[in-house]
Image (cartoon, rainbow, N blue to C red):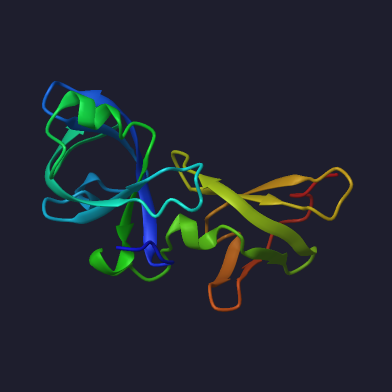
Length: 180
Protein backbone atom coordinates (compact mmCIF):
# COMPACT_ATOMS: atom_id res chain seq x y z
CA UNK A 1 0.00 0.00 0.00
CA UNK A 2 1.52 3.33 -1.03
CA UNK A 3 1.28 6.49 1.06
CA UNK A 4 -0.54 9.29 -0.70
CA UNK A 5 -1.95 12.61 0.37
CA UNK A 6 -4.89 10.81 1.98
CA UNK A 7 -2.54 9.40 4.64
CA UNK A 8 -2.51 11.23 7.95
CA UNK A 9 0.18 10.99 10.64
CA UNK A 10 -1.55 10.04 13.88
CA UNK A 11 1.37 9.16 16.10
CA UNK A 12 4.93 8.03 16.60
CA UNK A 13 6.28 4.83 18.13
CA UNK A 14 8.22 5.89 21.24
CA UNK A 15 9.04 2.54 22.85
CA UNK A 16 8.10 -1.05 23.56
CA UNK A 17 6.03 -2.54 26.36
CA UNK A 18 6.55 -6.06 27.60
CA UNK A 19 7.91 -9.06 25.76
CA UNK A 20 5.10 -9.78 23.27
CA UNK A 21 5.59 -6.95 20.77
CA UNK A 22 3.37 -4.20 22.20
CA UNK A 23 4.29 -0.69 21.10
CA UNK A 24 4.08 2.57 23.04
CA UNK A 25 2.78 5.26 20.69
CA UNK A 26 2.69 8.99 21.30
CA UNK A 27 -0.72 9.89 19.86
CA UNK A 28 -1.25 13.00 17.75
CA UNK A 29 -4.90 12.08 17.31
CA UNK A 30 -7.40 14.05 19.36
CA UNK A 31 -9.04 10.83 20.49
CA UNK A 32 -7.37 7.52 21.39
CA UNK A 33 -10.40 5.91 19.71
CA UNK A 34 -8.71 6.75 16.38
CA UNK A 35 -6.57 3.64 17.00
CA UNK A 36 -9.25 0.98 16.55
CA UNK A 37 -8.94 -2.77 16.27
CA UNK A 38 -8.87 -3.88 12.63
CA UNK A 39 -7.64 -0.52 11.32
CA UNK A 40 -4.82 -0.64 8.75
CA UNK A 41 -1.89 1.63 9.56
CA UNK A 42 1.46 2.27 7.91
CA UNK A 43 4.65 2.60 9.92
CA UNK A 44 7.42 4.51 8.17
CA UNK A 45 10.66 6.34 8.87
CA UNK A 46 10.28 10.04 9.58
CA UNK A 47 13.68 10.98 8.17
CA UNK A 48 13.57 8.88 5.00
CA UNK A 49 11.27 10.59 2.47
CA UNK A 50 11.43 7.69 0.00
CA UNK A 51 10.41 5.12 2.64
CA UNK A 52 6.86 4.07 1.72
CA UNK A 53 6.50 2.20 4.99
CA UNK A 54 4.91 -1.11 5.80
CA UNK A 55 1.26 -1.84 6.45
CA UNK A 56 0.07 -3.41 9.69
CA UNK A 57 -3.36 -4.22 11.09
CA UNK A 58 -4.12 -3.12 14.65
CA UNK A 59 -5.06 -6.20 16.71
CA UNK A 60 -5.48 -4.42 20.03
CA UNK A 61 -5.18 -1.05 21.74
CA UNK A 62 -4.94 0.29 25.24
CA UNK A 63 -4.17 3.52 27.06
CA UNK A 64 -0.63 4.18 28.21
CA UNK A 65 0.19 7.38 30.11
CA UNK A 66 -0.21 10.15 27.48
CA UNK A 67 -0.25 7.74 24.59
CA UNK A 68 -1.57 4.45 23.31
CA UNK A 69 -0.41 0.84 23.49
CA UNK A 70 -0.73 -0.95 20.15
CA UNK A 71 -0.61 -4.62 19.29
CA UNK A 72 0.04 -5.06 15.57
CA UNK A 73 -0.45 -8.13 13.39
CA UNK A 74 2.90 -9.82 12.80
CA UNK A 75 4.73 -8.01 15.62
CA UNK A 76 4.92 -10.68 18.32
CA UNK A 77 8.32 -10.27 19.96
CA UNK A 78 10.14 -7.54 21.81
CA UNK A 79 12.87 -7.61 19.15
CA UNK A 80 10.34 -7.04 16.36
CA UNK A 81 8.75 -4.14 18.23
CA UNK A 82 12.13 -2.56 19.05
CA UNK A 83 12.84 -2.33 15.30
CA UNK A 84 9.75 -0.09 14.97
CA UNK A 85 10.71 2.49 17.62
CA UNK A 86 10.90 5.97 16.06
CA UNK A 87 8.57 5.18 13.16
CA UNK A 88 5.60 7.39 12.31
CA UNK A 89 2.12 5.85 12.42
CA UNK A 90 -0.12 6.83 9.49
CA UNK A 91 -3.75 6.06 8.71
CA UNK A 92 -5.75 6.62 5.55
CA UNK A 93 -8.10 9.57 6.22
CA UNK A 94 -10.81 7.79 4.23
CA UNK A 95 -10.97 5.20 7.04
CA UNK A 96 -11.69 7.83 9.68
CA UNK A 97 -15.07 9.36 10.51
CA UNK A 98 -15.97 12.55 8.65
CA UNK A 99 -14.79 15.73 10.31
CA UNK A 100 -17.28 18.08 11.90
CA UNK A 101 -17.82 21.43 10.25
CA UNK A 102 -15.05 23.93 11.07
CA UNK A 103 -12.55 21.22 11.99
CA UNK A 104 -9.41 20.29 10.07
CA UNK A 105 -6.51 17.93 10.27
CA UNK A 106 -3.42 19.81 11.40
CA UNK A 107 -1.45 18.24 8.57
CA UNK A 108 -3.79 19.92 6.06
CA UNK A 109 -3.15 23.38 7.55
CA UNK A 110 0.65 23.21 7.39
CA UNK A 111 1.95 25.21 4.43
CA UNK A 112 -1.18 27.35 4.05
CA UNK A 113 -0.70 31.10 3.58
CA UNK A 114 -2.11 33.32 6.33
CA UNK A 115 -3.59 36.65 5.21
CA UNK A 116 -4.84 39.21 7.71
CA UNK A 117 -7.57 41.73 6.85
CA UNK A 118 -5.40 44.68 8.03
CA UNK A 119 -1.80 43.46 7.91
CA UNK A 120 -1.96 41.56 4.60
CA UNK A 121 0.06 38.38 4.06
CA UNK A 122 1.62 37.19 7.33
CA UNK A 123 3.44 34.05 6.17
CA UNK A 124 2.93 30.29 6.11
CA UNK A 125 1.79 27.87 8.78
CA UNK A 126 4.86 25.83 9.82
CA UNK A 127 3.23 23.77 12.56
CA UNK A 128 0.60 23.78 15.28
CA UNK A 129 0.56 22.91 18.95
CA UNK A 130 -2.19 22.30 21.50
CA UNK A 131 -2.87 24.35 24.61
CA UNK A 132 -5.51 24.00 27.28
CA UNK A 133 -7.80 26.39 25.42
CA UNK A 134 -7.17 26.62 21.68
CA UNK A 135 -4.71 24.99 19.32
CA UNK A 136 -2.08 27.49 18.13
CA UNK A 137 -1.08 28.16 14.53
CA UNK A 138 2.63 28.92 14.19
CA UNK A 139 3.09 31.25 11.23
CA UNK A 140 6.54 32.09 9.91
CA UNK A 141 7.12 35.28 7.94
CA UNK A 142 9.95 34.30 5.61
CA UNK A 143 9.98 37.69 3.87
CA UNK A 144 11.05 39.87 6.80
CA UNK A 145 14.72 40.11 7.77
CA UNK A 146 14.12 38.77 11.27
CA UNK A 147 11.91 35.86 10.09
CA UNK A 148 9.23 36.66 12.64
CA UNK A 149 7.17 33.84 14.16
CA UNK A 150 3.52 34.68 14.82
CA UNK A 151 1.36 32.57 17.16
CA UNK A 152 -2.35 32.69 16.36
CA UNK A 153 -5.01 30.87 18.42
CA UNK A 154 -7.37 28.67 16.38
CA UNK A 155 -10.36 30.64 17.58
CA UNK A 156 -13.19 32.20 15.57
CA UNK A 157 -12.29 35.58 17.13
CA UNK A 158 -9.05 35.52 15.08
CA UNK A 159 -9.57 32.95 12.31
CA UNK A 160 -12.24 34.12 9.89
CA UNK A 161 -11.90 31.57 7.07
CA UNK A 162 -9.89 28.49 6.19
CA UNK A 163 -9.95 27.54 2.53
CA UNK A 164 -8.01 24.36 1.77
CA UNK A 165 -8.72 24.70 -1.96
CA UNK A 166 -7.06 28.12 -2.29
CA UNK A 167 -4.51 27.39 0.44
CA UNK A 168 -5.40 30.54 2.39
CA UNK A 169 -6.32 31.18 6.02
CA UNK A 170 -7.93 34.60 6.55
CA UNK A 171 -7.48 36.25 9.93
CA UNK A 172 -8.66 39.40 11.65
CA UNK A 173 -6.09 40.18 14.31
CA UNK A 174 -6.53 43.08 16.74
CA UNK A 175 -4.32 46.15 16.40
CA UNK A 176 -1.02 45.58 18.19
CA UNK A 177 -1.27 41.76 18.00
CA UNK A 178 1.82 41.63 15.78
CA UNK A 179 4.83 43.44 17.15
CA UNK A 180 8.14 44.07 15.40
